[in-house]
Length: 260
Image (tube, rainbow, N blue to C red):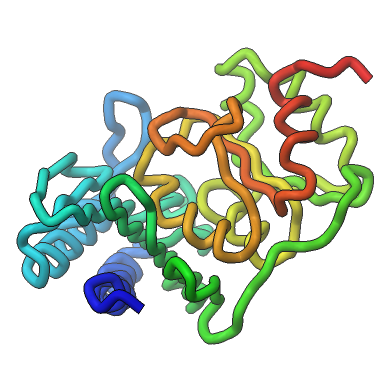
């Protein structure tokens, strides 16, 4: 295994734990909430956790680039770039819902090579390094082998995102073909797919920091993650993750290309 990648992966695990524990100190404590221009919430926990991640990771690897939700992009010259979301699921965080995570993705020359998703309130870590498999804590995880939409479980964040995108009818067409539907939003639906608890996670309104850590985990677990055009692009606002088997079928329906 490449030493530079392994060293950074191990540093990401340490950094995620430190930042997640910092954020946990504010969780369910009535922390003040501000609203950004896009009407997404932010707290002292978000900003403080991201600053901790920046200081920790760039302190160890000063030549690396860094993209974070709260403080933007810092270019680097090493070929490596960190893509972080200090608290993915801030809306859950501020309402006392324990499904939120500190997420760190690692990119090398445009390829996402490692991901760490730490759930402080639930004490789980999902992680993956290219070629090493995907894990929840120390247990290797893998996507399901369900091959029929009629037996599939589908996850999503909020129907309102599909309404805003003009795809609410297509979304409802997709979900009505599945066995069960669950509103496990943000990162959680993706890791549920990765560990085989469901088959599809579909979302709209995402950013690079929402996906950077998740791509390696889903793919190393044997799944597939793309934008709705079928290509992997974390800069696009739409995304679908699956067990791979149902991917093309689900994409066809969410795009509104089937009437059957």
